Amino acid sequence: MEYSFIYNPEKMVNEVFRKTMVAAGVNFEMLQDGTIKLPKDLSDEKLTFISSQLEGFGIKIQTKENRDIVEEIKIYIKKMVYEGDIRNVKISELLSKQLGFSYPYLSNLFSSKTFTSIENFYILVRIEKVKDLVLLENTSLGEIAHNLNFSSVPHLSNQFKKVTGLTITQYIKFRKK
Image (cartoon, rainbow, N blue to C red; front, side):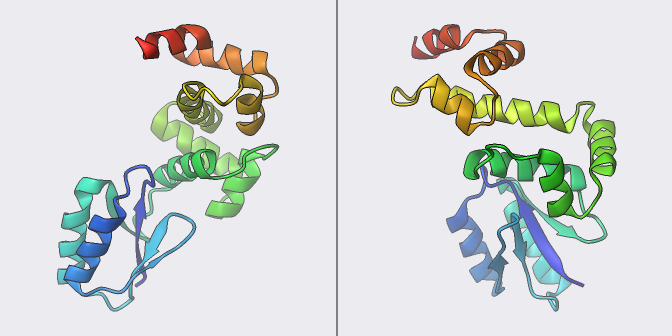
């Protein structure tokens, strides 16, 4: 059986992870999709040790049998927004290709487990990044809107107010106090 760990890149503590794997004597490979590939012949004892050590860092063990697709969707969207180029991308096509399921299936599964849509989650993640970027003085709202795939500055502003209840200006003033 092939094992992997799926992790949230925001919570990943590379040094602790590497030390844990070395202490357990386990070779591993970090893949671009946010998983860490482990040897197929990993003993249950080592697997239990690794799992218990890494759980506190937001890293959980995953097999093909217990795959958490909703968590994979969340992690992929966060990784895409924070690390990738999301201009002019279709989230539906990217998720289908990445996870190997049709978008209607992924959308229904996500909504049934989270009570929100993938699109709403995508907007929330982008607004979280906007919050970080607006506090940097060297980035214009036009650049932020363009880079985070909002159609215009007014669209970005409307989405920001809808999600946070504040205008961007109010948010900046609040954060600087």
